[in-house]
Length: 104
Image (cartoon, rainbow, N blue to C red; front, side):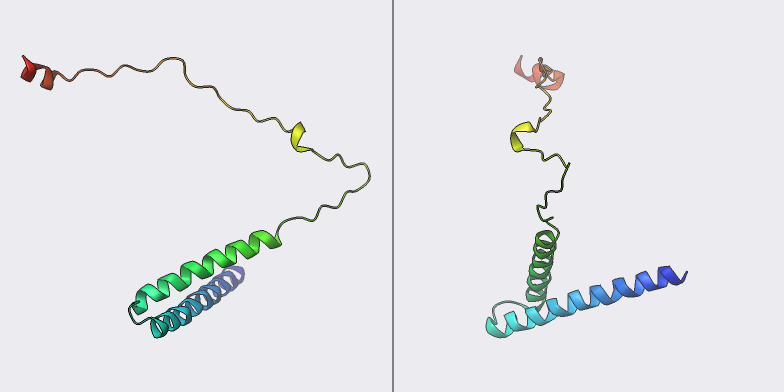
């Protein structure tokens, strides 16, 4: 139970920080450009912050290329992509009975 409460507290603190930074960015946008509503500015701030956090996290998680002895390195030319072929036949569309009566 303590682990769950700790996880919930960390999650709540992280989300509060995230939304707080979004509110600050939204206030600055509204202050610089009064045509931007405060709510839209907060939305822009939160989305921009999320995109920035995701990009930084991806860049930080890229492993360094350290070659160890005995480790096989996979070259791009050695990679095989398995792709399914297209189906041979297409299904025919059935004519609707409702419209065929109107044409007669």
